[in-house]
Picture 1 (spheres, rainbow, N blue to C red):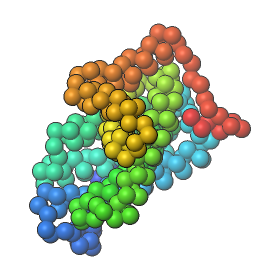
Picture 2: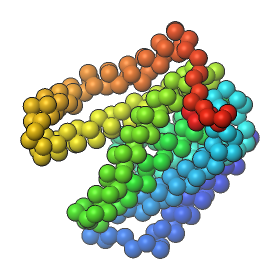
Picture 3: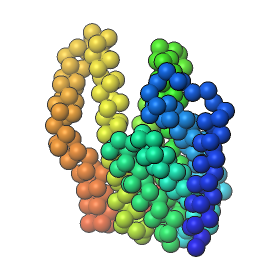
Length: 282
C-alpha cells in the first residue's frame, strides 16, 4: 500500500517533534495542565502547517498549477498522507491530555475521513494537495496568536499583527480562493465523498468568517460614529443570525453543498480554470 509509509512516517515524526518541543521550549507553568499541554501542541501544529504549505506549494508549481481530473500520483499521496499522519497524532495527543472538546473531535474526524479518502482517490490528487495548501496557510498566524494569548501577551503589537494577519489570510484563502476551488472540485470526476468533505470544511470556514466579520462590525460600530445606523443595522442582523443557529447553519449548508450540487450536477457547469500561460492558478 502506497498510503501506509507516508502516514506512518508522519505520525512518528510529529510524535518526536512533540517530545522535542516539550524538552526544548519553556512552557507557561502558571496555566492549567490542559492549557499547558495545548501550548506545546500548538508549536507542533505550526510545524505541520509550514511543512504542509511548503510541500503542497512545491507540487503546485512543479505540476503547473492545479489539475482536477488528472490521476493521483505518489507525490500527492505523500503530501496528503503527511497531513493524515499529523491529524492522527494530534487527535491522540488531544484525547490523552483531554484538550479536545466536541468541536475539535468533529474537526479531527472530518479531517481524517476527508484526507484519508484523498490518499486513496485515483483521480484528483493535485486538487486534494492544493486543498491542504489553502486550508493550512492561515493556521500559523492563529496558532502564534493563541500562543501569545496563553503567555498573557494579548496587548502586544505581535498579538495584534497575528490576529489581523489571520483574519485577512483566512478570508482570502477560505472564501475567495476556496469558492472557486470548490465549484471546480464539484465539477470534476472525483469522488462524491471528497466533494462532500471539502464542502463541510468550507462550511465550517464560512462560520468562522462570520465570527471574524461579527467582531469587525462590533469594533466599527463602537468607533465609527459616521455610519452608526448602517453598522448598528448590520450588527443587529448578525447577532440575530448568531442567536438563531439553525437558520445560520441552514444558509451555510445551502451555500456549501446545495448550490455546488445544483450548479455542477444539475446545471452541469464545467470546470473553469483560472489560467495564465497554461499554468492553472485555480
